[in-house]
Amino acid sequence: MAGKGGDKELPQRFRGESRAATSPSASPVAPVLSSGEVTTPSVRSGNGLGTSLPDARGGGRAGSAGAVRERPRAASAAPLTEDEVTEWIGTAGKSPEAAPGVTPDAEPESASWLGAGLAALIVIPALVIGSLTVGAVRHFTGTRAGSPPSAAPARHEAAIRGQAAAWVAQQVGGGVAVSCDRVMCAALEARGLPARDLLVLGPFSRDPRSSAVVVETGAVRALFGTSLDRAWAPAVLASFGSGSAGITVRVVASHGAVAYQTALAGDMAAARAAGARLLADRRISVQTSARAQLTEGLVDLRLLSALTALSRDQRVSVVGFGNVGPGVSAGVPLRYADLTPTSQDSQAVRSALNRLDTRIRPVRTVPVVLPDGQAVLRVEFTVPSPLGLSGS
Image (tube, rainbow, N blue to C red; front, side):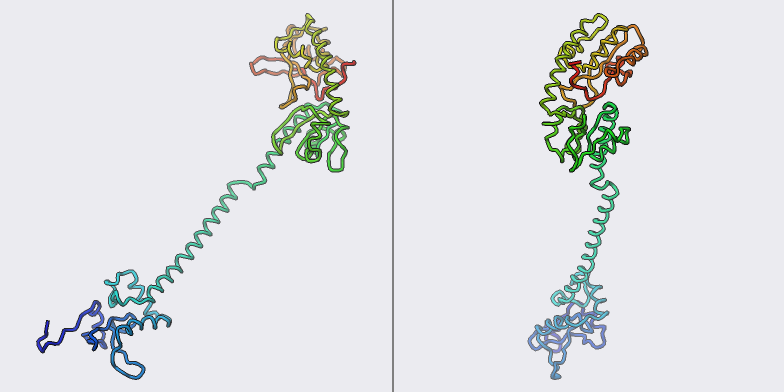
């Protein structure tokens, strides 16, 4: 629309012009360039409008629009002043339309670079601190919640060693030589076995043939491999645990596995004959399950001799025979008998057994309650069962 004074065009008004007009040095109307373009507001100018800047030669003619757009990029190489940063922070969260004195087309690239830099300075340290915090929490929580990795296996091995040591101290007869590694021998000595009966096995020690029982631990297996069970200790008296922590108590065959099996077969034949005589004794009653054990020759010859001698003083009722120890080999003689006194009390049975010869005297006679609730008197002998008794 034409003005009153002629057909001169009215100047265009841009956003932010009202703020720029408050500056005394700003002109109320943006001057029209000769090319028909108008200047745009500059963030770095003192007012809100892009004024004509003199060039190096003192010319007062305004530059082109492209020159005006390049000035903010050229100025971004210089350090920002405190007022410029404050102005940018105040307008960073607003849209280009809402920012006073800044048009969308004239948003400086330095503002975007500065915003990304500040965001990186905030986010990166936060991520680093967060990851360090999570790592520290996991570290300290894991350390407090659990024990060191090697503590649990060590406790497990110590528990199995304790079970084996307790069994050997109770079941192995006095004066019987026992071969073991250094740690196991120390555990056995702590439970009452005399040091003179313990043969410590090591890299430079002799083999366990001079002993009657060998406690096979992981250290002993490392020394002898499978030669113990194949050549020198074929029969298992008891076993505890499994794997590398497992412990096996074995009978030592001083003359080799073949000689041991030959002697065992001879004693089983003698036990079948003694069992038949015991079954024919009218003063001894044997339950059905125990009768089969007698006829097969599975009972220790010492026990058979003790029962035969006991029947001379009183009537005897045998409930069953068995062995004390988990994992015992099938061919090991049964060395305890559960009795039910019929006419005499337990004290009379103990007194009669204590008068027997030491070769056939039981190591202990104790009351036991069977799983079915029946109360019996257990007559028990130690390990190992001596071989070669058939000749005597």
